[in-house]
Amino acid sequence: MREQPGRVPEGSTGARAASMSHRRGEGWMDEPDWRRFITAYHQEHAGITEQLFSLADTSPYAWLAEPLRAVEGTVLDLACGSAPTRQELPDADWVGVDLSAAELAEAARQGRGPLLRAAADALPAASASVGAVCAAMCLPVVTPLPQTLGEIRRVLRPGGVLAALVPSQSGLSPSGMLDWVRVMAALRAVRQPWPNPQARDGLPALLRTAGFRVRRDERHVFTLAIDSAGAAALLADALYLPGLTTHRAQAAKRSLARWATPGRRLELPLRRVVAELPIEQQSQETT
Image 1 (cartoon, rainbow, N blue to C red):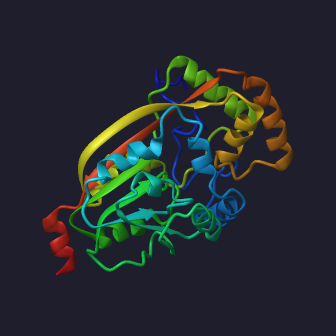
Image 2 (cartoon, helix red, strand yellow):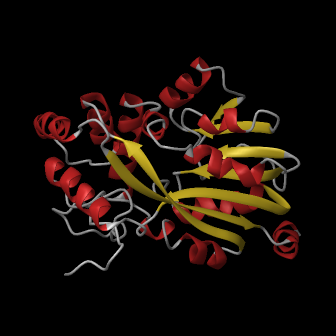
């Protein structure tokens, strides 16, 4: 099928994917398998998303945090990983929550806190107790998503804000599309098997269905400096590819290292969605 102009090729960070019902042989994983994969992945690669984003021309985390700087009350960082948004919100009443002990250890090593270990679908916070939820690159991968969105609704106070950063399907230039084809071909991958692909460019509609009022929906194309063998290896490791063997990963890194010449830039389209919980809905849920 011919790709539409400006859309990310299959398999790139913003590629179109089916839901958890992927056909077997195309990266399909059921929810228990996905949870096992994601647990092991972050145990081995703690802090990798922050490391990859450090190659960007400007900080995606600063962009995400911008609408949260004026929020009053607690900011709960959902699936916070190594907690990179903490340094973007130094004056906030911030708390990071993640299920990965390795990610939390990396956050603590960098002096970021306070931190709590918990699942996204069972948040350790009282109902209507937080002013904002920050969700950096987590909504396409946390499972089960409906329960997670329900927990976000529960803990937000009336009028509370959700700011989410997710990969985008569109925004690449023609050369950017070709670059992603090159990357995925090296990895011999068709796509990343996102369990919640609808939580990328479809996130605004998903949040409206879940009872949120979307205030802002914006896309920005960042560029990553993939100009060294180390940066190329980091890129390969940062993609969610459960079927990638060690042998294939090593071969891909060698191939991408040859491609990663000085000045090489890789486009990365991301979407920022800012929503709020209507006061009337929160009131109804707590009565």
